[in-house]
Image (cartoon, rainbow, N blue to C red; front, side):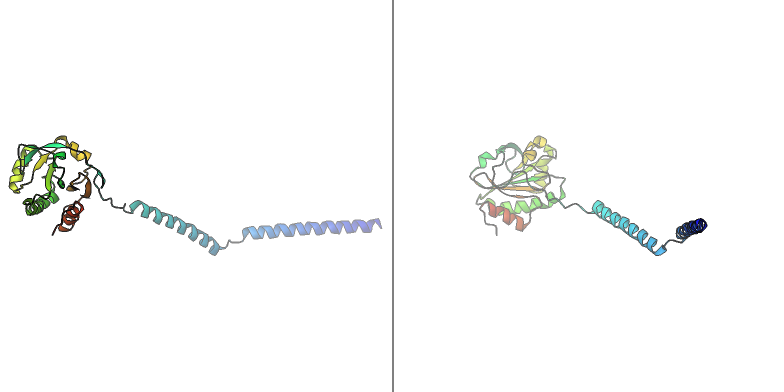
Length: 221
């Protein structure tokens, strides 16, 4: 009876060892088997695709053009601009001085320009024609304000372009700064009460001139 039990224990031990060996053999076979290449390639493609998408997004952000900024006058519509008194160096009234306050009661057109500004050079003959067409009735005052050119050149410039409206000199550019002029030509339309009604920051055209004069109560044909 004792021997029988011993034989059963020995057989049980052998069975356990055989099962252990089988497990170890299966584990070794699983470890040595080749991995699924399709799955690995899929993972690699997904990672590379994600990296490529990020590069495209960053490139678009880096090279996407910034929105163009349209310059505007520094004095808002509906407000009174700073007063000034400046000498006349060209055009009509050479040798005198003009102040904005003295023109109260008449609409005023202030044109900030420079001799070195090509759009300004194209605009000034047009301004002169418009000014002459209204000058007989004295419906508005037109002033050209220059701060970047030598003051000695303003007179000859006015003669060259046959300018009849006053060309003022803003020494040091103080008035340009007060009016927030960051681009030329810039033209302010001020009504008879001394209030800014329109600001055009580009060369004037018949359409924008009509718009500006209409804002100060002048009908432009």
